[in-house]
Image (cartoon, rainbow, N blue to C red; front, top):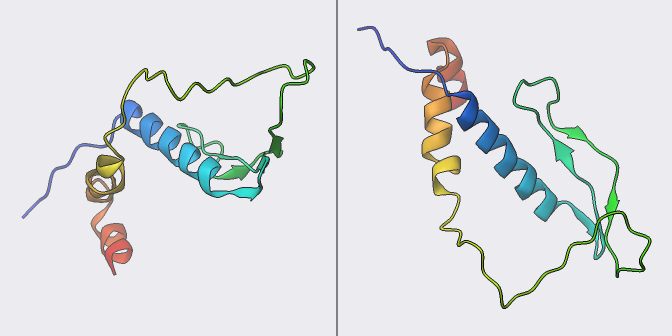
Length: 106
């Protein structure tokens, strides 16, 4: 029996990359105000490359970018990352060669 699968689209790859980056930013805190980001590009020219640390602090007026968080304002809701971590992974694995799929599953 021959299995036909579709390869993930660039849109799916880009979305998965963004989610991974966000997750890494959330879990790679080195202290209360500094994070170490990692990046993976959609074209895979960068694969989990560590970037320079980013420090957060109070706005002293000299920061080129300021993030203002207002807990009272909601722009959109997040249902979760279920697709990316389950169905998304299954879709990617099913698009691999049979030998590669077997080695990933084992």
